[in-house]
Length: 453
Image 1 (cartoon, rainbow, N blue to C red):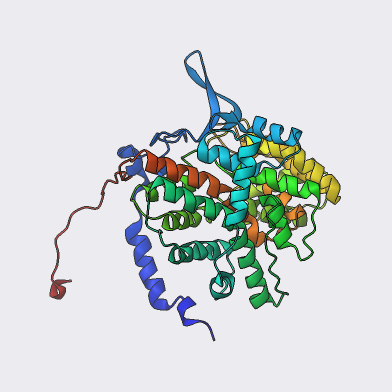
Image 2: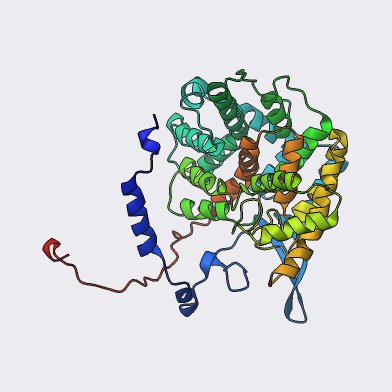
């Protein structure tokens, strides 16, 4: 018998049709009143709503007084992320902990400072007594982002200073959540697979000497085994997803909710709800599903004509989910290139070689090359189109044998660093509550007594 709480009854369908009929706004009104839908102008450029020192996304430069598209750049606290990655790779170190330090405190750490900070994360990487049994294993959800949000909100009850929004206390809370996100995500997944799929349940405790990336693989895999390359590529993925300017949806949510004066747990849960959306953190799952369909529909992966034809069918809503999108291609800000995808690609090729999946990597490379040409032919676009970081991240996670259910939580494990930095910045600057304007376009009308309706 179906769960009555999950049923859509005829009455609900009727009410839903009312919502749709009376909720539609004439699209022409947005132009009439010069509304910046999605807080973007007509060219897709974000409306300036705040200032930050945490990160910078660059997609254009000024040439003779004109804005001209350029190769994308991403800076954390003024440091080029490509140089950051090159630096810790050259010194044969993991970089996510260094990235967290840089984002939170605005400075690159010395080795002593980094060791001390990593030690602090290791100390905080333990859940309250009974939390796994009493919270994570109770009513496990099929969606790990919901599980993560529920766990975060429940941690409020374990914090004696949960509502203290001083910088010192919020920093303490943020560092603890950064440390705990891998456990909350992986343990939530293990509980679901056990109770719903009958899989063996194992809970590996984290090891203090391991990096965040190493610990994720250690607690996820039954034998705790991973290669050095696997851990380093996951570490790079965390670094590249840690922050992306104040205007992305989940980080803007952090600013909006923080500006109300609410607690850290509520703020982070709200940002998790944003990141869960397929237009934001769930995009790499769509890329994986699209490529799965491509492999089923295209007989010869090496035939550019067949692949291009499939891409055209995507744009014409004749393939995959019929939404008219080539997932992983294009970005709200970047046009010529997404620096995160550029950094990632070389490491992805190395991992594909280690895993014996060179043929699949060649297919990804072909789609990356053909998609902009097909989009330019089929559609009028106002800016260039290039592969974004989601294009390759899903492929990486599949080669790391990460379950699809953890793709977006891995994003959250990284992005909690950026959210924390922005929450602290919002508090430090004591800004006003964020309250943009909406114009009412409903005509006024009289109230009718019940007998006259």
